[in-house]
Amino acid sequence: MELKYDELKTFLEVHKAGTFTKASAHLGLSQSALSQKIARIEEVMQAAVFVRHPRSLSLTATGEKLLSYAKEAVQMQEDFLGSFDQYQNELSGTIRVAAFSSIMRSILIPKLASLQRKYPGVSIEYTSYEMFELESILKSNRADFIITDYEPKLSQTEQVIIGEEEYVIIEAKKYKTIPNTFLDHTSMDNATESYFQVIGRDKDYNRMFMGDVYSIIDGVALGLGRAVMSKHLVVSDKRFIITTHKKKYIRPLVLSYSKQNYYSPLQKQVLELLS
Image (cartoon, rainbow, N blue to C red; front, side, top):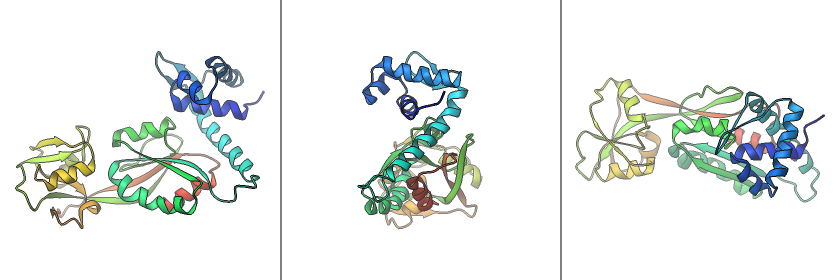
């Protein structure tokens, strides 16, 4: 017995969708036909690949192993068949990139835009998440690449340090700043707390939450408080007083992706550009 291409594609779609209902709608298959494909995979594997919850699915240990194989096998076949397409003579395909907001807008989109301009057949899907969400995004196959400011401890992944961010404190030049107030994304944002740990400052301050990094920047400019901010985002912005500390607070930029024996030409190109 063997695993067929369309069965592996179905498996990947079910995993991505999170439910059989969503996957069947996307694939245009009845839930019965879809279930039969998954059942045949489980027959070949002699093990369940999904754990069925009331409103969602999760992978079993066997499913986790199959995920890596299925992604690689499907990609290899699509690239091989694409090489015989007489109408396709340049790079094409879709890559999904997930990162935290400051890096997404300031670095990733400008860096990868040249690739999309050169190859109109390339589609890059950019999605911003909070830092604590990114590991699960890669693990659940909702992105091909993620960027974090630490090295994730995920099995079957590769990590490449592609740069670093230095953090500074900013406050408004034009307005009197609300005293002892620091702006963060959400209650889960630990940038301010981590910065103070490094420089040895008391953590006694008020927090205000702004939702995303650019709202923080605008809020500081309007005098709503100060913020710990990536230096590259504000170094040329004349609205701010920038305060540095002799103990620099620097975080790495880490590119993570699933470990595979085969990477598509598009994956390789993105890796080269970001590395």
